[in-house]
Image (cartoon, rainbow, N blue to C red; front, side):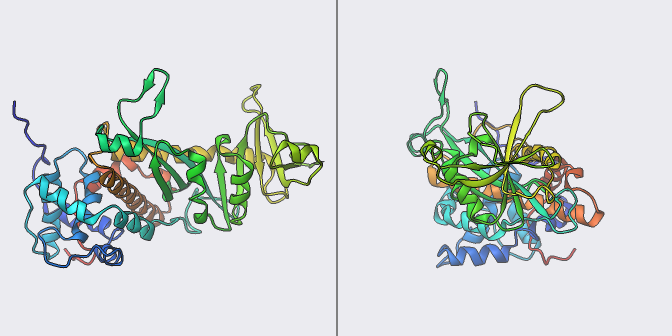
Length: 394
């Protein structure tokens, strides 16, 4: 039985085309052109679907996740025509795929690196602990189509009963806890671990940030590398980590040291100074242990750090926004080849960052915490819009 392609109901409205200016302001076509040119992907001859429009199309694929390739393109080109770009629709899925292959994935990654940055300003509510901008690190996975090429490139995750039905990619991200903006990320095959990918993200940390991390990330080398960025750290650690009490402090925390190995402890070698906060939650018996680079309890009292640590879970909310509300109910990404999977991934991260930039701008105008604005509503609103250039005037 023939399957009908999904289309957007009700056609396009003038207000839909005008409103997408909000998105276009945050992913400007002019910036896309600059990046595409710098990456050597600009067109040597005029095509129906040039590289800059293709890059915008890769982002739009995620905003219209549940419709066909062709319908996404029709929607995109309709918006661009309102902006004065006389582009005609390319009707075939094959032509769209060829344009994506010509663009490659490196240009989309370069576009993400050009756009993505921390959003919070001094006026952003909920983004700061005292003078620190709070950020978190964590990872997630995405299923990709089960093709031979994807399986060979990315691999299958192990399960208790063998392996998964789909190959997977692994993503590791740095996110502001207050705005949920993912301002740095890395992706690779499921074969690479989170702590390995974490080393590639540390360059995005800056002085004045306070990085929250779960106990799975702690290790001497990763801790020292993160501390070397001059950002401050607040990480949970496992119970079996040896943390000798060097000095008890008035707020109940204590100074200690971490060492590269047990041999360093036995040989009496000096370790790296840390401050330890131990606490229980709600009268429970489990003792949670945090270590931090903030050694002075007057700057960050133990009780405040214990209350702050749950903000780490805000990055899980960011992943939920990406995987549930943008990616939607589809099990896998669309792309059948590793190069286009990578391209699609960076398009997804650009789409999420742009949506979070829109929400943050709205929150600043209304003096709201960005958490007070519905991400789901923002996604639904933008999905009813067509990309256009930012200078288009209604």
